Length: 112
Image (tube, rainbow, N blue to C red; front, side, top):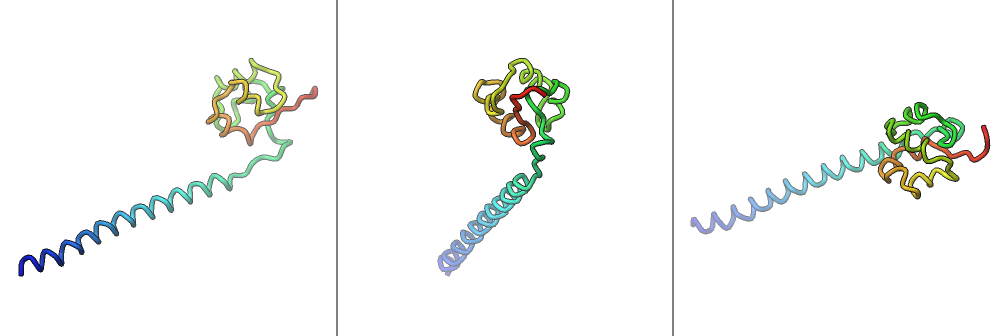
């Protein structure tokens, strides 16, 4: 009789542990998806409102979200740029910093 109870309780306990783990995985995945959708819906400024990396001062560049004054100083120091991608290609900024600011900057080549 005791073995029968053990055989009945053991699968139920294992099922409960499995379901608890599965519920946690679903909850984490749901939070991750909502965080990703929130970052995808952030409004990017129109091109005329973006900061020009070839003409802006270090102080103006430092106002870009995600850009520190030291990164802004590097941008000024290594001018001029053909495109904003040059910041990454020439090693001026690391990829994580570039990814956070790329929607807020532009590289004008003409005199302004």
